[in-house]
Length: 249
Image (tube, rainbow, N blue to C red; front, side, top):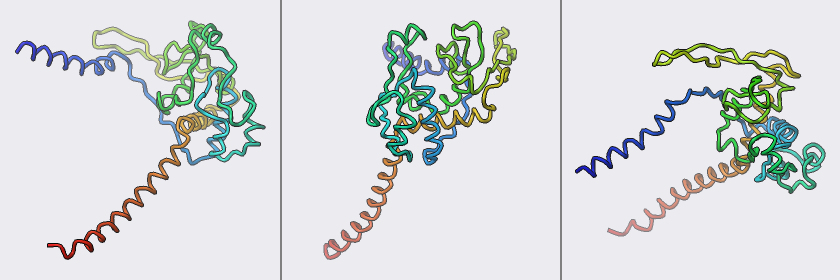
């Protein structure tokens, strides 16, 4: 009886662990990423931003440049506008930066971004890229509302500008007060308006989400075709069965 009670108590404790972890951390609001894989122009703009800004430090080893023909680009266009870090369109999106150097500069090796939106979620990446703010206590001078004490600098700050946090004071259940970031405000304008920057990030995240599974659209179309075929075949098979078995009692 004691063994059963102990096992039951252990199971309940394990089931409560995720709830405890969630309750111990502050909830993070994520903005909805406007993902639309049917918008080839958005995907092409996002690909250009990815190659020009992200591919300097982050690789996308599971993605080949030639796959961008699926979003309406020709191989000559890929070679002329996007092929900076490779020689052939069939090459993967690798980078020249060495792992040891990257770790020494940033404190950690920048992750491969091939499936980052499948890992983190498109909403997380969209909010993260719009959540950088100035923080002089950090080695890079930047922090992030989604990823506290992030090691990555804000590589798009020349476009967005410099954001600063506006704090609010909250009191917890123990009566202790805490300073929390309520919102970010623009302190120094960049080359874009905030609306234009949000649009650029939307295109970038749209491309990164497509890059995580470029065959998804084709796979879904094949799945729909198969279901339609099975539906039609079921009707035919049903009436064939009735015809074959009509004289059997």
